Length: 315
Image (tube, rainbow, N blue to C red; front, top):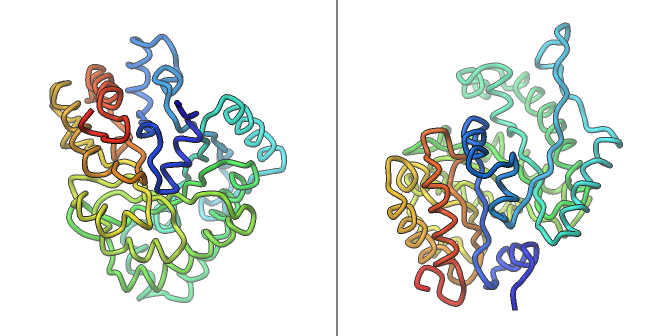
């Protein structure tokens, strides 16, 4: 018997095998505009019947007279009510709901004071940097808590901590400066809704920190960049504790390939990541405008042909 999309997603997150692998993808606005020429709709998730749907709190535009580091507007009760209404509408149709991610603590620090200052801040101005990160953390908490209060199935947080080959900072620096703040955000979310699932976005090579993210209380690692990490190793070492969301290589599968190669890339990823549940299929990045329409169709075709349990990748 076929599951609803929400049942499918929650079953996968519980590390059980649903009827088929749940999936979604995301497109940059320029590519979404091109896709609309084929689908006739702005809502490509609806067109392709994605299992995960998103609700979004839009941060108000900063007034010109307010410094960027002082602009931390929190969601209002009216904002949360709108998110709750949108969430209920998707739930009534049977879809899993995720809150849109806002940039993380480290990412916000980079935006406010620059990448170099965000890296050397702990060493040159530790007291000032602590105050800065604490302000950011409280703001990020308020944004995440809005989704938890709205009743989404997944609250999506994260920080880009990896490059193509390594971490952007040492594990020791992460554990001292960012891990406690990520833990604090997760604990605050769970205090609102202990059943909500926490997804953590991180591009690039993040393998050395996955154990830390599990300790923080993360349920889902989102992105899972196949060009930077060994998917089989991740599944074997962390698959019992984490759900992986992503994994289909935006560079290796979607870039400059044929539709047949995209389907094969989807198939090979499913063979590694899908057994036992704990997997939501998706490109590891938001797809950009160099990806042709045919490749987007091929991604969904690959899941249609090879995504069913009990043997995803081999059907």
